[in-house]
Image (tube, rainbow over all chains, first blue to last red):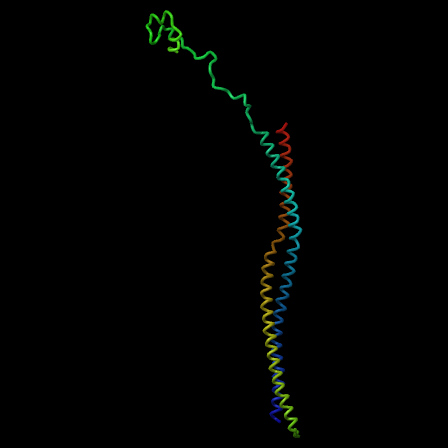
Length: 138
Length: 95
């Protein structure tokens, strides 16, 4: 009977001690989990506050960007008009041909003045120079 | 004072003691499972906290979006100025 009493006491003590130890361990773990979850809650709140400004800001940027994208073709159309209007275009009729004297090739009269006629005798050259000789001398 | 037990009472007591040990073992097993599960939860919560810290770091600069929108509006205003200037110049060039 003494054995039964001792075993009963040991049984009860083991049950109470086991429960106490395990509850202590689980309590510590749950306290750590609660601390982490509280920090997670604060982080979620911070993320929500940061994310609240994203949507209106992006909508505003998209709206303004759309206006800019729609206005740019008008701007470069006007710029093309300015470039076209300000570029110098010479008239086609103003292009000059090479300058030629209206009287044809000039003939030098210096040789005639001194009585020189190359390729002919001096007496004949002085008397009457022929047109073919004029071309040769010029 | 000494209590005398009958054989039946003693057998029942032994049964209760053995049952009590079994209950202690079962409670220990169940509490071990509970501790393991809570430890798993704790580890997952730590991972979630790390992920949330990264997300918070990624979203910490969202205040710059409003500033960017203001600057884009300034670009639009400058574009309108360019429009007016080009309109004036284009009128002079055409005339």
